Image (tube, rainbow, N blue to C red; front, side, top):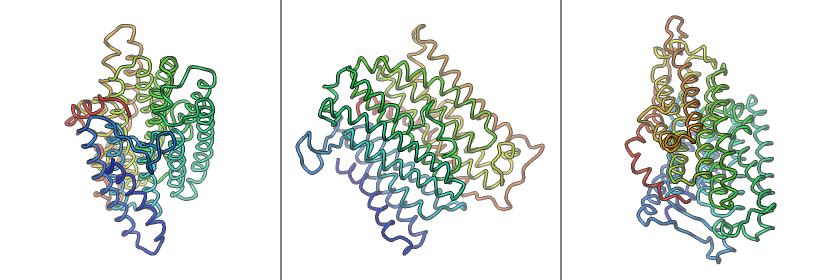
Length: 478
C-alpha cells in the first residue's frame, strides 16, 4: 500500500508546489516538475501493481489508524493498482506532448493536471461512498477549469459542464444520504452485505446511477461532452476523454457489482446493456454526421463508452467474470486510443489550418505521421486485431455468440463495429484524396506528430501483454 500512497501523494504535492510558486518559476520549469512527478507516480504505481499481483489479495488501510467504521478506508487490488499505472502513464504521455509540441499549453495546465492525476488516484483507491463523492468533486472541478484554459470560446461549454456536473453531484449525494440514513454505513465493505431491495435502496441507487451516468456522459446523458471536449485544448481533450469519464464509470461499476443487492443488479443489467447498444449506434451516427475533426472524435467517445456500459450490463445480468475483464480492457484500450486520436486531430488542425473534416484532403501526404496515428488509434476503436480494442471486443462477443438467445447482443456489438468503421474510414478516405490537397504549414511540428502516435502504438502493443492483463483482471474485485 505504501507505493500506492506514494503514487497518490506525489502529483498532489507537485500540484500544490506549483500552485504556491505561481509565476515565480518559468513555464518550462513548471512543466518539468509536473512531468517528473508523473514519472515518479508511475514508477510507484508499477511497484504497487507488482506487489498486489504477488500477494494475490486486496490490501486495506484505515487512514490515521482509526477503527473500521470510523476511519476513511483505502483499498488496493489488482484492478485499482492497474488503474493507477494507467492513469500515471496517460498523464506522462499527454504531459510530454504538452511540454514538447510546438502548440504549447497554458502554464496553468500543469498544476491542474497534477490535481486531476491525484483526484483519479484517490478515486481508484477509495472504499467509502462519501470519500468517492469528494474525489468526484475534485475531479469535476479540475476538469472544468482545464476546459476553460482555451479562453473565451470555451467559457460556455465549461459553464455547461460545471452546471451539469454539480447537478450530477447533487443526485449522487442525495443517494448517499439515503443509504446512510437507511443503513448507517458508507464503507463499501460494511455496506455491501447489509443492503436490501427495498424502496429506499432502490431510490438511492437510481439517484446515484443518474448522477454517475451524467458525469460519465453515458447515453442518453451525454450532451455536455462534445462541446466541452471539442473546445478544450488538445492535451486537455485527450485527458478528458481518456481518463476523466472513466472515474464515474468505476463508481457505477462498484455501486452495482458490490453495493447493490444481487437481485437489483440483475434487474438493472439488461437496461444498462440496452443503453450501451443504443449509444454505440447513436453516438456513432452523430460522429459520422459531424463536420469538424475534434467533434467526430468527441462523439466517438459517446459511442465507445457504449461498449463499457454494455459490458457492465451483461456482467450484472450473467455474473460472468469474463465480462469484468472485457469492461476494464475496454477502459484501458479506449483511453490510449482516444488520447492518440485527440492529439493527432489537434496536430492536423494546427498543421493544416482547418477544423473541418473536408480540410483533411491529402493529409496522408502533407501530415503522414499524424494521419497514421489517427488511423492506427481508430483501428483499435473498430476492433481490428491484434489491438487492445480487439481483445476487449472478443471477450465481450464470445459469450454472446455461444448461445442463440444471446445473439441480439452480438448483433448490437457488430452494428457498433460497423458504425465505428464508417466514421474512422470516412476520415481516412478523405485523407487519401490527393486530387485537391490542402497544403500544410510551411514547417509542421514533426515531434508533436510522433508524440501523438505513441499512445496508438501502445494500444496495439496490448496484444503482447494480453494474457498477463487477462490473468491480472481475472481475480475480479476492486
